[in-house]
Image (cartoon, rainbow, N blue to C red):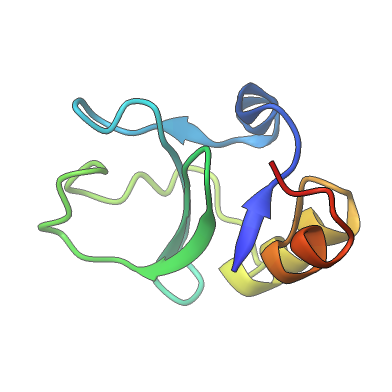
Length: 97
């Protein structure tokens, strides 16, 4: 499982938005390409398929800014830039909280 390794507020700087209450301790980032979003909590980060009935995010996609990357490509960039890490590696190296 992928986990965030920087302060969760840092993700706002790269475009993540806060989820609606009562999930407002989590963040999300939508991707028109692939109709998915990245869901971020203090304990994990995951790619989720868009569902209009998901209570954590807005109902209609706000696609004023069209990024050509997919959620998976963006997730790989997050790993490369040091925003997230593999839970397996964190535990193996003894760095897990």
